[in-house]
Image (tube, rainbow, N blue to C red; front, top):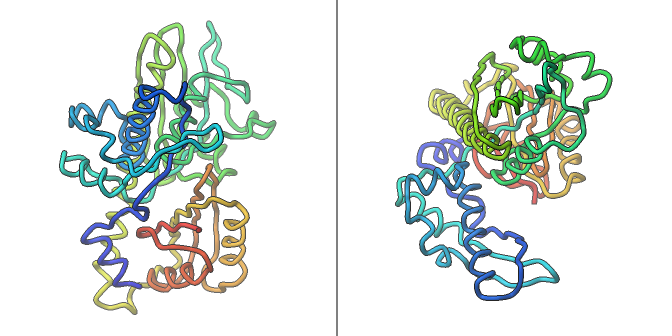
Length: 337
């Protein structure tokens, strides 16, 4: 197992899937509508594989999608849905030949707080529909990263105020977010009168990144924000993979020295059925004395799970892989079938 981790990290690993299926709406069954849907499917696949918005991809490779139909294995209608099966390996080769790296490391998840300026007042945005929030949540599915929102119940309302957010009180934000177990926090301050969107990105390791994006419409501002958010997410993933690589490289020669000594370890579990995920968490919590689940947070189809253990990375991998129906995807990343 340790060799698998080390080889995977050092030579790069391929995507777990050779094909991926997208369901898309189409206006009708005309050739024009189908051609548009096929290109949209390839663009969506490329965005998920790289973590880069399409405008960034075409800026680096203007002709990237010129022959998008070449990456379509099959397509057709199923009931009212239009299904497109994408050749992931072929698209990956095209991306890499264009100098664009495929994002194959663990994907972080974010807890999102939102405030808004309304005249002279700054307020927390609750559960009501909001164009910026809806677009950011859609981006989570678009790029396959977890983005969740706080409940905004009485506990949240008392724990964090707009003044603390705009005053950049990181401690207050992190304390209010602790109940959700997320390692990364996205805080937004919408300023519609100024056509500006302020953002803060906090992580539990103490790092903070902030800035502003501007645009004439909420959609323009949010799309600019999403580009920055994805760049930040990719950087986090690269750091996490680099730390795992260094740990394995330093310890691979002497496996008995690969002990984690109670250090927290962040895992990502991809799942399609939450019942299977709960069974895995129960297995790790109750059936393994040497490995304990500390915290976990859920997104639409993935969970970020923090475990503590005194075992080696090799032993942790063996414990997780022993659960029926789980598949090793990459270092620290697993998928439930």
